[in-house]
Length: 142
Image 1: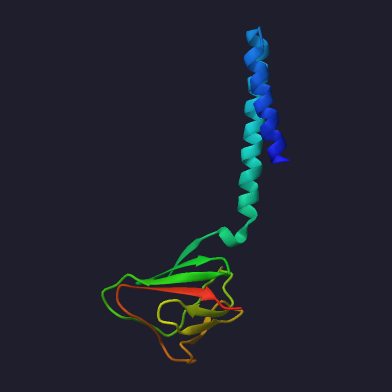
Image 2: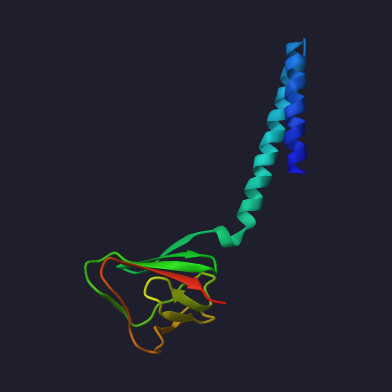
């Protein structure tokens, strides 16, 4: 449908170029402008519905930043010059649930239905440790 609307706009613009009267030309071009705005609006709505393309930024701790991408994965960054040691970590408001594998160091973590880290590098209940100036990249495992 969008492709047809774009073709209609192109044809109307060509007709406007051939119009003898300025008023007719203005009416056609105003209509084309309105149609193009509609096309952009529909494209924007379609992109907004693709939840897996959204990126959320949430600070989980004063020195740790998490950037999530839907349920597909996330990045944890320790912005500090010191090791970060957390007793727990929760991704409130995220879609993260399941098993995720860290892409550089290769360890896995589990995130439960409450969006909390329930296992870190194979152990449950131990503190979560992230080195200084470190970015950890996690991708969901199926």
